[in-house]
Length: 119
Image (cartoon, rainbow, N blue to C red; front, side, top):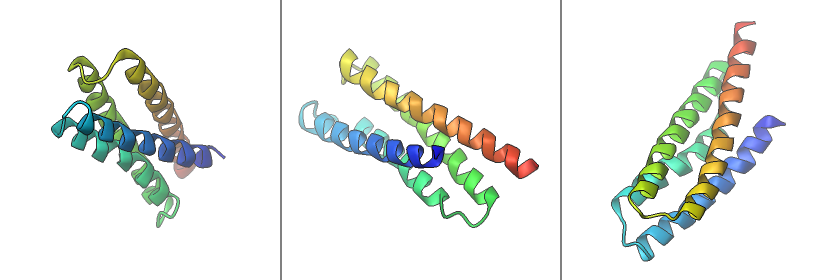
């Protein structure tokens, strides 16, 4: 059940990131940072989807761990965009809340999966 929520939330987040990048390019004329956050922010959901069909439990854990790394990278780019005055506080907080929820779900999934692998 947690994996399904993670899949849905990571896809919804990726869609928000795509829309954010459109905004950054059209309204803010920002092209470099938007590429970075587009790559890392959409990779989260792609890795979660890929993990579901992992070749083994270890492959599943690896994909989820990489998704977590991408989420942490997205956190960096999001904060940089905020501090660089490309995002207002409201937009930043909204995305940041969703991202932190994804990070929490990923941390929980990785920890639980590692425990099951070691049992």
